[in-house]
Every structure is written in structure tokens, then in C-alpha cells.
Image 1 (cartoon, rainbow, N blue to C red):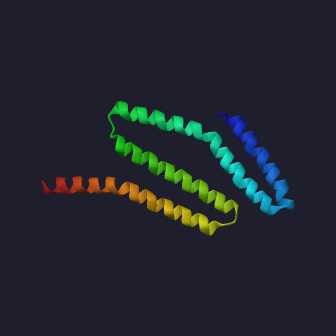
Image 2 (cartoon, rainbow, N blue to C red):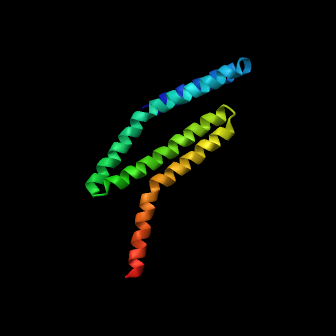
Image 3 (cartoon, rainbow, N blue to C red):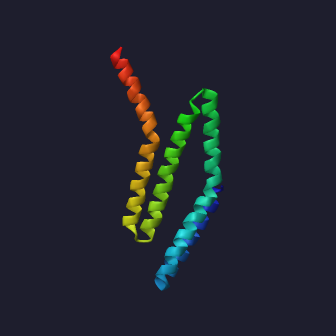
Length: 129
């Protein structure tokens, strides 16, 4: 991904959306969502490259693969829910966006629960000795 290309596409889209919003606000909202999805799709390959690089580093360091996967899932859920929330806010649906964020927080808690359980078991075991 070329950052200059990303910025150029985004700025051109913003100018077009601002102009279209004056005439057809409903089309501007659809265009905003479409451009947002397009921009994220431009970034995704680099995101995958970063995740794979960290995955390789975690294997070399001997980090538990399951724990690393959980961390990647948690970060991914955070980014995706924030992205979806921003789209909802752009469409003037803040209430729906807040529900998406809440759902993301619950999903993160569910994924993190086994790690928290293991930590608590370890602490209880240490205290009992």
C-alpha cells in the first residue's frame, strides 16, 4: 500500500462527498460507506503482512500460539468494531454504533476469559503454597 495513494483517494472522495452531500445527502452517505470499505481493503494486505510477521516472531520466541491468536483476535475485534462504529456515526446512527462497540467489548471479554481464568488459577496456586 502506498500511503500517498491512500491519502489521495481519501481526499478526492471527501471533496466529492462534500459536493454531493449538498445535492443528494442520501447518496453521500452510501458513497462514504463505499469509500471507507475501499480504503480499508487497500490497507488489508499490509495488515496481514504485519500479523504474519508477528506470528513468525512469536514462533521463534516460543510464545504459545494459542495466546498469540487470542491477542490478534482481540486487536482485530477492536479495529473492526471501531471501523463499523465510525461508519454508523457517518450515517448519523450513533446509537447503532454504540451497540457495535458494546458487542465488541463483550466478544473481547469472551476471548480473554480463558487467559484471565488461567491467571487467576496461577495466582491461587501461588497463594496456597
